[in-house]
Length: 91
Length: 324
Image 1 (cartoon, chains in turn green, purple):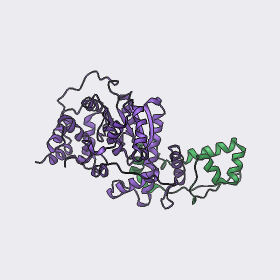
Image 2 (tube, helix red, strand yellow):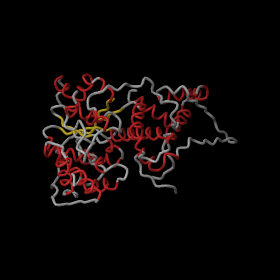
Image 3 (cartoon, helix red, strand yellow):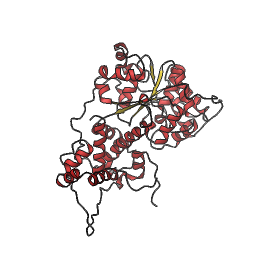
Image 4 (cartoon, chains in turn red, green):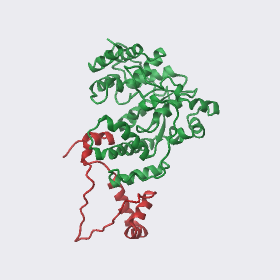
């Protein structure tokens, strides 16, 4: 397995939200109007009070670049210990 | 030379002897042990010891067998581990062999247990566990090394060796688990993790290890898997343990459950000799009675912890599935 950073589960959850928004107009509306409640609805439990959620929509003339939390301080051995995966680095 | 230095020296030198023929034609269906599957700091030490007090069960300390293919692998890994003292890494297995062979855990019996292992360096680890299960028979053996569920290949090795084994999956509230991990591990400086990310590191162990257990359990028949909140067992054993007993197919009477409420009576409830002092959670070994474990009222994790927010959400989702 190649090491692409700590596996946070972001891609899995973000993908679920996008797929659901594509097929469920009501959920799409909820996601635009009240993203906290939409996300809470998707995961089945309340979000922390202090967690802000912002939904943005890209267009042909607009993209967003997300800089995630920097977890490189976990170190390779820390990530391997935490995940149980043996990573190849780089490439 | 003391028994302690004998053990350290023998392990450090990587000394292995192989003079005993391994058993032939091993039958993987001969035993159906119970494995407790859980990350560290899930109350597994006290709960496994409680289970072992049931008249039809017999629990062992942490054997950490399935990290290797054969005994020689374990001895070499122990000798190579620069972060954990050798006598700590192998303590559970040495204590178990000493206790089952000689009915006591002394410096001398532990040294003989190590020699017993060294003479069986080429034995597959399942043959060693078979031996311990045979010693425990007719009681059913129970084992719980958190390392067993640390990697997919360890679980596969267990499942191949014991295709009828049962898996009791213990869960604990993520915030309480991580606080416990932090207290136990941060002072050891065992991992080179930045201080501000240590909660994230601990949560990663909680999340990935439970996820791995769930993936593994997805391929097991229902009869071989049971998930229980560990707090329910330690806080309400009289109400929770009967259902665990029924799942294991053993006596669920109040007498049997009462016996399980006294982990302190186990031969493994306490420190071992200096040459094999641990083999379970040291905190439990120093105070091996039942202690209540309050469940945090709120599920979301403390705001002051630096956690990737997506990972936080996935953890909340999983914890909610676990009944928190």
